[in-house]
Structures are given as C-alpha cells and as structure tokens.
Amino acid sequence: MILVTGATGFLGRHVVKALRTRGKEVRCLVRTAARARAVADYQVELAYGDVLDPSALNKAMSGVDAVVHLVAIIREKRNQSFDLINRHGTEMAARAAKEAGVNRFVHVSAIGAQDNPDYPYLYSKWQGEQAVINSGLNYTIFRPSIQFGDGDEFINTLAGLVSAFPMIPVVGSGKVRLQPISVEEVGAMVSLVVDNPHFGGRIIEIGGPDHLTYDEIVDIIRTTLNVRRFKVHMPLSIMKRLIRIMEAVTPNPPATTSQLEMLALDNITDMDSVEKTFKMKPRHLEGNIGYICSISRLEALKITLGFIPKRIRDH
Ligand SMILES: NC(=O)c1ccc[n+]([C@@H]2O[C@H](COP(=O)([O-])OP(=O)(O)OC[C@H]3O[C@@H](n4cnc5c(N)ncnc54)[C@H](OP(=O)(O)O)[C@@H]3O)[C@@H](O)[C@H]2O)c1
View 1 (tube, protein in one colour):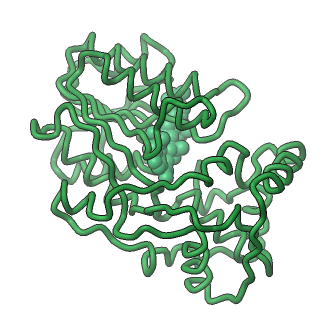
View 2: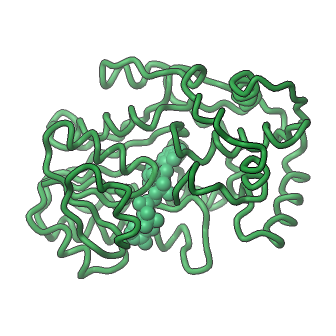
C-alpha cells in the first residue's frame, strides 16, 4: 500500500494515476470529501485529515509500504505559513512514517531549495528536505522545475495576462531561465521510485528538455494563443510595488512578492536530467500547452485579478 499526501493537488492526481496504472494499491490523505473527488476515478482508499494532525497521520500510515509526500503551499495564507506546512508538516509526515515502519519516503521538493531565509518558500522546502534526510527513513527526494499541464497555475496565469492585455509585464530582463516539465511525466517518475532500491537515499533534480528564458516562455504562449503582444520589462522593485497594491485589494493576486523574488533566480538543472535518470524523453513546453487556448476573455480578466476559474484550476 502506498500513501499519497497532497493527492488532490495538481501533481498529486497524476502520481495517483501513475501508481494505479502500475497496479499499486493507493491510499490518499484528503482533507474533505469534496476534495476527494479529484481522485475519485482511481479506486483508492481515503484517509481523512490534515498533515498537521498526528492522529490522522498515524491512522493514514498504518500498513503502508511507501509514502509519497506532496503536501506543500506556494502561497502563504492567514493560518498557513511556509514554515508550518512545508517544514513542520513535512517533519510530522516523516516522523509518522518512521514510527509506522514505512520502507520508502518519497518527498517532492523543488529546484532551488536552499538554506537561505531571503527566499522563504525555497528555504522552507530546504528545511523540509533536511527533515526527511535526518528522519532515519529510506528516502528519495525529487526537485522538479516548474511543472506544466492542464490545471497548472504558472502557465495558465501567464496565458491569462497575455490574453487580457495588449502589453505583457515581464519581471526584470526576462532572461531568467526555467526548465518546464510536464506534470504527467513528473507523476510517472515519482511512481517509479516508490519500490526501486536503486533510488534510495537520492536527491533527484528533474526538468524538461529545454532551458527557456521567461521571455521565451511568454513567446511560446503568444504563439500558442496566436496573438500579437508587446513585452514590457519592468524592474523587480516596481513589480513588487504593483503586487503589494494588488495584495491590498485582492486576497489572491496573480503572483505574490515572494514568487516575484524567485523569478530573479534560474530554475534549471541538466538538460538531460530526465533521460539520464529515467531513460525517457520529456516533452517540450512548446506544442503541449493547447489547454490555454480555451481561456475566454472574461476568464483571462479574472485570472489577472487573481481568481483562476475552477474550470481551469479546481483548487
Ligand atoms: N507545481 C509546480 O510547478 C511545482 C514545482 C516544483 C515543486 N513542486 C512541489 O510539488 C508538490 C505538489 O505541488 P502541487 O503543484 O501539486 O501543489 P497543489 O496543487 O497546491 O497541491 C497541494 C496539495 O497539498 C494539500 N494540502 C495543502 N495543505 C494541506 C494540509 N495542511 N493538510 C493536508 N493536505 C494539504 C492540498 O489539499 P487540498 O486539495 O485539500 O487543498 C493539495 O492536495 C509540492 O511539494 C510542491 O512544492 C511543485
């Protein structure tokens, strides 16, 4: 039995699908029956509870061979800080797994995870990794670059901006490099390591087949949407001011200041990271984001105001 935490999220449902395709029995830690609908197609067991609830965790881990831990937040909310969910939540999940005698703990971190409080998200992801490494568990840690696919936040949000406005604001020089990777493929790779001894005790960085600058990603989105738009490069300091104003008027701006700061850092690994480790060729961003073409003008406007319609991203 494999326990997946964060199963109802963007990556989680692909991990569940891939595990089920491999014939694995899967249990999902879910918070509500409504959210459990995201995995309803896959014939999984459900364990209800929050990652911060030790008794829910103990119950969920009972009789489990491996855990895939995906719970994390990319935006802080009133009662949910990076420290609480990404560090402490991971610490709690790892402790419960150790107590339950789990054989493999697969943790999904992020490229750029680092011991540097100036980048609070990346710092919390690094602390989460440390909790796993120091837990005494047999672990595998993944560090993916930005993931794309139907329901993603990053590409859909950019597509909303491109679609809604004649001019596209780009942070800084637009030369920061990212390595977008398909969420479906990340799900497949995660599912492959749960029972393979070869992957024990490893930190695996993965990214797609291209190092793309932010400018190039915007160009791919423009081409996919078949629209002509101008890019306006704006200094990080001005973008941060704009986002602070938006943060004051909308609960969920299209980006947070902490996300903007991360856009000053390259988010890449070796170009052949996936082929080298998993002997598979990952798909390109270009030609594989047709899902953004269904965003209507009204939906694009909502996205720019920070409200991604449920039809596009259901959480
Ligand atoms: N998406 C990317 O581009 C990307 C890139 C690199 C690394 N990652 C990492 O990949 C992992 C999965 O990311 P994702 O994009 O799938 O995130 P996501 O779509 O936001 O999903 C987060 C999941 O965590 C669950 N969750 C949040 N707080 C919880 C809590 N307190 N207790 C129990 N469950 C909780 C959510 O449950 P609900 O459904 O109930 O909200 C959801 O299932 C994360 O560790 C993230 O840091 C993602």
